Length: 324
Ligand SMILES: [Mg+2]
Image 1 (spheres, protein in one colour):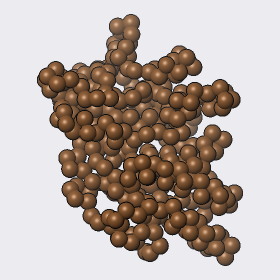
Image 2 (cartoon, rainbow, N blue to C red):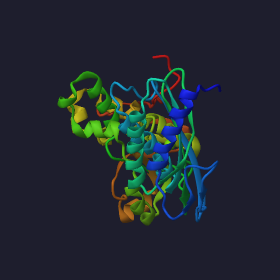
Image 3 (cartoon, rainbow, N blue to C red):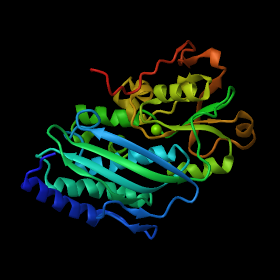
Protein backbone atom coordinates (compact mmCIF):
# COMPACT_ATOMS: atom_id res chain seq x y z
CA UNK A 1 0.00 0.00 0.00
CA UNK A 2 1.43 3.36 -1.02
CA UNK A 3 0.75 5.92 1.63
CA UNK A 4 1.41 9.59 1.20
CA UNK A 5 3.52 11.24 3.94
CA UNK A 6 0.41 13.15 5.09
CA UNK A 7 -1.51 9.93 5.73
CA UNK A 8 1.51 8.39 7.39
CA UNK A 9 1.86 11.25 9.87
CA UNK A 10 -1.88 11.11 10.55
CA UNK A 11 -1.48 7.43 11.35
CA UNK A 12 1.29 8.30 13.78
CA UNK A 13 -1.03 10.70 15.57
CA UNK A 14 -3.73 8.03 15.75
CA UNK A 15 -1.21 5.53 17.11
CA UNK A 16 -0.57 8.04 19.86
CA UNK A 17 -4.31 7.98 20.65
CA UNK A 18 -4.29 4.19 20.71
CA UNK A 19 -1.36 4.29 23.06
CA UNK A 20 -3.04 6.82 25.31
CA UNK A 21 -6.32 4.89 25.51
CA UNK A 22 -4.95 1.37 25.54
CA UNK A 23 -5.28 -0.19 28.97
CA UNK A 24 -2.65 -2.08 30.81
CA UNK A 25 -3.24 -4.39 33.67
CA UNK A 26 -0.31 -6.20 35.28
CA UNK A 27 -0.86 -9.22 33.00
CA UNK A 28 0.27 -7.08 30.02
CA UNK A 29 4.06 -7.02 29.95
CA UNK A 30 4.28 -4.92 26.79
CA UNK A 31 1.26 -3.17 25.27
CA UNK A 32 0.73 -0.99 22.19
CA UNK A 33 3.88 0.28 20.51
CA UNK A 34 6.02 -2.70 19.54
CA UNK A 35 5.58 -5.27 16.77
CA UNK A 36 3.43 -7.39 19.06
CA UNK A 37 2.13 -7.23 22.58
CA UNK A 38 3.55 -9.50 25.26
CA UNK A 39 0.92 -10.84 27.63
CA UNK A 40 0.50 -13.51 30.27
CA UNK A 41 -1.12 -16.60 28.75
CA UNK A 42 -4.63 -17.60 29.87
CA UNK A 43 -4.72 -19.87 32.91
CA UNK A 44 -7.04 -22.47 31.40
CA UNK A 45 -8.36 -22.70 27.83
CA UNK A 46 -7.39 -19.95 25.42
CA UNK A 47 -10.41 -18.54 23.58
CA UNK A 48 -9.75 -16.67 20.34
CA UNK A 49 -12.37 -14.88 18.25
CA UNK A 50 -12.80 -11.89 15.98
CA UNK A 51 -15.63 -9.72 14.77
CA UNK A 52 -15.64 -7.29 11.83
CA UNK A 53 -18.00 -4.38 11.24
CA UNK A 54 -18.31 -2.54 7.96
CA UNK A 55 -19.88 0.85 7.29
CA UNK A 56 -23.07 0.47 5.27
CA UNK A 57 -23.47 -3.18 6.29
CA UNK A 58 -23.37 -3.13 10.08
CA UNK A 59 -23.68 0.54 10.89
CA UNK A 60 -24.52 3.94 9.48
CA UNK A 61 -22.91 7.10 10.84
CA UNK A 62 -26.33 8.76 10.45
CA UNK A 63 -27.42 6.85 13.56
CA UNK A 64 -24.18 5.78 15.24
CA UNK A 65 -21.60 8.04 16.85
CA UNK A 66 -17.91 7.09 16.76
CA UNK A 67 -18.04 6.54 20.49
CA UNK A 68 -21.01 4.18 20.17
CA UNK A 69 -19.27 2.33 17.35
CA UNK A 70 -16.12 1.80 19.40
CA UNK A 71 -18.24 0.49 22.25
CA UNK A 72 -20.37 -1.77 20.05
CA UNK A 73 -17.54 -3.22 17.95
CA UNK A 74 -15.78 -4.43 21.08
CA UNK A 75 -19.05 -5.43 22.80
CA UNK A 76 -20.03 -7.65 19.84
CA UNK A 77 -16.75 -9.54 20.00
CA UNK A 78 -16.89 -9.74 23.81
CA UNK A 79 -20.31 -11.34 23.47
CA UNK A 80 -18.69 -14.30 21.69
CA UNK A 81 -16.39 -14.77 24.69
CA UNK A 82 -19.44 -14.63 27.00
CA UNK A 83 -21.16 -17.19 24.76
CA UNK A 84 -18.26 -19.58 25.41
CA UNK A 85 -18.64 -19.10 29.17
CA UNK A 86 -15.29 -17.33 29.24
CA UNK A 87 -13.77 -14.11 30.43
CA UNK A 88 -11.97 -11.66 28.15
CA UNK A 89 -8.29 -10.84 28.48
CA UNK A 90 -6.77 -9.02 25.50
CA UNK A 91 -8.13 -7.19 22.45
CA UNK A 92 -6.51 -5.95 19.25
CA UNK A 93 -8.49 -3.49 17.15
CA UNK A 94 -7.78 -2.82 13.48
CA UNK A 95 -9.31 0.08 11.59
CA UNK A 96 -9.52 1.05 7.92
CA UNK A 97 -10.12 4.78 7.71
CA UNK A 98 -11.61 6.79 4.86
CA UNK A 99 -10.07 10.26 4.38
CA UNK A 100 -13.13 11.95 5.86
CA UNK A 101 -12.40 10.55 9.33
CA UNK A 102 -10.80 13.06 11.71
CA UNK A 103 -8.42 12.54 14.59
CA UNK A 104 -11.25 13.52 16.93
CA UNK A 105 -13.47 10.78 15.44
CA UNK A 106 -10.81 8.21 16.21
CA UNK A 107 -10.35 9.54 19.71
CA UNK A 108 -14.11 9.16 20.27
CA UNK A 109 -14.02 5.65 18.82
CA UNK A 110 -11.35 4.62 21.32
CA UNK A 111 -13.21 6.31 24.18
CA UNK A 112 -16.22 4.11 23.44
CA UNK A 113 -14.03 1.01 23.17
CA UNK A 114 -12.26 1.95 26.39
CA UNK A 115 -15.56 2.25 28.27
CA UNK A 116 -16.59 -1.36 27.56
CA UNK A 117 -12.99 -2.57 27.94
CA UNK A 118 -12.79 -1.09 31.46
CA UNK A 119 -16.17 -2.49 32.34
CA UNK A 120 -15.18 -6.01 31.26
CA UNK A 121 -11.52 -5.86 32.40
CA UNK A 122 -10.22 -6.26 28.85
CA UNK A 123 -6.80 -4.90 27.89
CA UNK A 124 -6.56 -3.29 24.45
CA UNK A 125 -3.02 -4.28 23.48
CA UNK A 126 -2.67 -3.39 19.82
CA UNK A 127 -4.11 -3.35 16.34
CA UNK A 128 -3.49 -2.06 12.86
CA UNK A 129 -4.41 1.03 10.89
CA UNK A 130 -4.86 1.39 7.19
CA UNK A 131 -6.51 3.76 4.74
CA UNK A 132 -9.83 2.87 3.14
CA UNK A 133 -10.99 4.11 -0.25
CA UNK A 134 -14.61 3.40 0.60
CA UNK A 135 -16.15 3.09 4.06
CA UNK A 136 -15.00 2.71 7.64
CA UNK A 137 -14.03 -0.80 8.67
CA UNK A 138 -13.30 -2.16 12.12
CA UNK A 139 -12.04 -5.57 13.13
CA UNK A 140 -11.74 -6.64 16.75
CA UNK A 141 -9.88 -9.77 17.81
CA UNK A 142 -10.03 -11.05 21.36
CA UNK A 143 -8.19 -13.52 23.52
CA UNK A 144 -10.07 -14.91 26.50
CA UNK A 145 -9.88 -17.61 29.09
CA UNK A 146 -12.43 -20.32 29.89
CA UNK A 147 -12.22 -22.84 32.69
CA UNK A 148 -15.08 -24.88 31.27
CA UNK A 149 -16.09 -23.58 27.86
CA UNK A 150 -19.74 -23.91 26.81
CA UNK A 151 -20.26 -24.88 23.20
CA UNK A 152 -23.23 -25.04 20.83
CA UNK A 153 -23.15 -28.79 20.65
CA UNK A 154 -24.46 -30.21 23.94
CA UNK A 155 -28.24 -29.80 23.64
CA UNK A 156 -30.32 -32.98 23.83
CA UNK A 157 -34.00 -33.68 23.19
CA UNK A 158 -36.11 -32.61 26.18
CA UNK A 159 -33.80 -29.76 27.24
CA UNK A 160 -35.40 -26.39 27.89
CA UNK A 161 -34.51 -23.59 25.45
CA UNK A 162 -34.04 -20.24 27.21
CA UNK A 163 -32.96 -16.72 26.37
CA UNK A 164 -31.71 -13.77 28.41
CA UNK A 165 -32.97 -10.21 28.16
CA UNK A 166 -35.50 -8.94 25.63
CA UNK A 167 -34.64 -10.11 22.10
CA UNK A 168 -35.57 -7.72 19.32
CA UNK A 169 -34.83 -4.62 21.40
CA UNK A 170 -31.77 -3.73 19.31
CA UNK A 171 -33.72 -3.88 16.04
CA UNK A 172 -36.50 -1.85 17.63
CA UNK A 173 -33.88 0.75 18.62
CA UNK A 174 -32.65 0.94 15.03
CA UNK A 175 -36.24 1.25 13.77
CA UNK A 176 -36.81 4.13 16.20
CA UNK A 177 -33.60 5.88 15.08
CA UNK A 178 -34.57 5.50 11.43
CA UNK A 179 -38.13 6.74 11.85
CA UNK A 180 -38.36 9.19 14.74
CA UNK A 181 -36.49 12.18 16.11
CA UNK A 182 -33.90 11.17 18.69
CA UNK A 183 -35.71 12.99 21.49
CA UNK A 184 -38.81 10.84 21.13
CA UNK A 185 -36.96 7.48 21.00
CA UNK A 186 -37.08 5.08 23.94
CA UNK A 187 -33.76 5.46 25.81
CA UNK A 188 -33.74 1.81 26.65
CA UNK A 189 -34.19 0.71 23.01
CA UNK A 190 -31.44 3.12 21.89
CA UNK A 191 -29.17 1.69 24.55
CA UNK A 192 -29.94 -1.84 23.32
CA UNK A 193 -28.98 -0.90 19.77
CA UNK A 194 -26.06 1.46 20.29
CA UNK A 195 -24.49 0.16 23.51
CA UNK A 196 -25.28 -3.56 23.81
CA UNK A 197 -24.02 -5.25 26.95
CA UNK A 198 -22.30 -8.63 26.61
CA UNK A 199 -23.91 -10.79 29.30
CA UNK A 200 -20.95 -11.70 31.50
CA UNK A 201 -23.23 -10.84 34.42
CA UNK A 202 -25.23 -14.05 33.83
CA UNK A 203 -22.27 -16.43 33.82
CA UNK A 204 -21.76 -16.91 37.59
CA UNK A 205 -25.33 -18.22 38.00
CA UNK A 206 -24.99 -20.29 34.83
CA UNK A 207 -21.80 -21.93 36.14
CA UNK A 208 -23.28 -22.52 39.59
CA UNK A 209 -26.34 -24.33 38.21
CA UNK A 210 -24.45 -26.77 35.95
CA UNK A 211 -27.69 -27.24 34.03
CA UNK A 212 -26.51 -25.55 30.83
CA UNK A 213 -26.01 -28.00 27.96
CA UNK A 214 -25.34 -25.58 25.10
CA UNK A 215 -24.77 -21.86 24.72
CA UNK A 216 -24.66 -19.26 21.94
CA UNK A 217 -25.10 -15.48 21.74
CA UNK A 218 -27.86 -13.80 19.77
CA UNK A 219 -25.99 -11.79 17.16
CA UNK A 220 -28.11 -12.67 14.11
CA UNK A 221 -31.61 -13.06 15.61
CA UNK A 222 -33.30 -15.87 17.55
CA UNK A 223 -34.35 -17.90 14.51
CA UNK A 224 -30.82 -18.17 13.09
CA UNK A 225 -29.26 -18.90 16.48
CA UNK A 226 -31.79 -21.68 17.16
CA UNK A 227 -30.81 -23.19 13.81
CA UNK A 228 -27.13 -22.96 14.80
CA UNK A 229 -27.78 -24.81 18.07
CA UNK A 230 -29.89 -27.40 16.22
CA UNK A 231 -27.17 -28.03 13.67
CA UNK A 232 -24.32 -28.25 16.17
CA UNK A 233 -26.26 -30.37 18.68
CA UNK A 234 -28.15 -32.47 16.12
CA UNK A 235 -31.54 -31.83 17.73
CA UNK A 236 -34.84 -30.25 16.71
CA UNK A 237 -36.49 -27.34 18.53
CA UNK A 238 -39.90 -25.97 19.37
CA UNK A 239 -40.02 -22.21 19.93
CA UNK A 240 -43.19 -20.86 21.56
CA UNK A 241 -44.08 -17.32 20.53
CA UNK A 242 -46.16 -16.78 23.67
CA UNK A 243 -43.09 -17.36 25.86
CA UNK A 244 -40.68 -15.00 24.08
CA UNK A 245 -40.12 -11.91 26.25
CA UNK A 246 -40.42 -8.68 24.25
CA UNK A 247 -39.52 -5.14 25.21
CA UNK A 248 -42.69 -3.15 26.07
CA UNK A 249 -41.36 -0.15 24.11
CA UNK A 250 -40.77 -2.39 21.06
CA UNK A 251 -44.36 -3.63 21.31
CA UNK A 252 -45.56 -0.03 21.39
CA UNK A 253 -43.49 0.82 18.31
CA UNK A 254 -44.73 -1.91 16.02
CA UNK A 255 -46.65 -5.13 15.57
CA UNK A 256 -43.33 -6.47 14.23
CA UNK A 257 -41.77 -6.71 17.70
CA UNK A 258 -41.81 -10.54 17.62
CA UNK A 259 -40.40 -10.57 14.07
CA UNK A 260 -37.60 -8.33 15.29
CA UNK A 261 -36.82 -10.86 18.03
CA UNK A 262 -36.67 -13.63 15.42
CA UNK A 263 -34.62 -11.88 12.79
CA UNK A 264 -33.42 -8.48 14.01
CA UNK A 265 -30.13 -9.55 15.50
CA UNK A 266 -27.45 -7.61 17.37
CA UNK A 267 -29.09 -8.23 20.74
CA UNK A 268 -25.99 -9.95 22.13
CA UNK A 269 -28.16 -11.79 24.61
CA UNK A 270 -27.43 -15.42 25.49
CA UNK A 271 -29.46 -18.35 24.17
CA UNK A 272 -29.01 -21.60 26.07
CA UNK A 273 -30.37 -25.05 26.56
CA UNK A 274 -30.79 -26.45 30.07
CA UNK A 275 -31.15 -30.00 31.31
CA UNK A 276 -34.81 -30.57 32.14
CA UNK A 277 -34.27 -32.49 35.38
CA UNK A 278 -31.78 -29.98 36.78
CA UNK A 279 -34.14 -27.09 35.97
CA UNK A 280 -37.04 -28.89 37.66
CA UNK A 281 -34.88 -29.44 40.75
CA UNK A 282 -33.22 -26.04 41.09
CA UNK A 283 -34.98 -23.68 38.68
CA UNK A 284 -33.65 -21.80 35.71
CA UNK A 285 -30.47 -19.73 36.26
CA UNK A 286 -31.07 -16.06 37.00
CA UNK A 287 -31.73 -13.84 33.99
CA UNK A 288 -32.94 -16.60 31.64
CA UNK A 289 -36.49 -17.24 30.47
CA UNK A 290 -37.71 -20.51 28.97
CA UNK A 291 -38.98 -20.01 25.40
CA UNK A 292 -39.19 -23.58 24.13
CA UNK A 293 -37.80 -27.13 24.14
CA UNK A 294 -35.25 -29.18 22.27
CA UNK A 295 -36.88 -31.97 20.25
CA UNK A 296 -35.74 -35.15 18.56
CA UNK A 297 -33.82 -34.29 15.39
CA UNK A 298 -36.48 -35.78 13.11
CA UNK A 299 -39.09 -33.39 14.57
CA UNK A 300 -37.36 -30.46 12.92
CA UNK A 301 -37.30 -26.86 14.02
CA UNK A 302 -40.79 -25.58 14.72
CA UNK A 303 -42.52 -22.50 15.99
CA UNK A 304 -45.82 -22.45 17.85
CA UNK A 305 -47.68 -19.20 17.30
CA UNK A 306 -49.88 -17.61 19.97
CA UNK A 307 -52.99 -19.06 18.29
CA UNK A 308 -51.58 -22.57 18.73
CA UNK A 309 -50.68 -23.25 15.09
CA UNK A 310 -47.28 -24.75 14.37
CA UNK A 311 -45.06 -24.12 11.39
CA UNK A 312 -41.39 -24.67 10.53
CA UNK A 313 -39.16 -21.97 12.04
CA UNK A 314 -37.27 -20.44 9.14
CA UNK A 315 -33.84 -18.94 9.78
CA UNK A 316 -34.54 -15.33 8.89
CA UNK A 317 -31.66 -13.81 10.81
CA UNK A 318 -29.59 -10.96 9.52
CA UNK A 319 -28.04 -12.03 6.22
CA UNK A 320 -24.93 -10.00 5.43
CA UNK A 321 -24.93 -11.14 1.82
CA UNK A 322 -28.57 -10.38 1.07
CA UNK A 323 -29.09 -7.75 -1.60
CA UNK A 324 -31.83 -5.92 0.25
MG1 LIG B 1 -21.57 -15.66 18.49
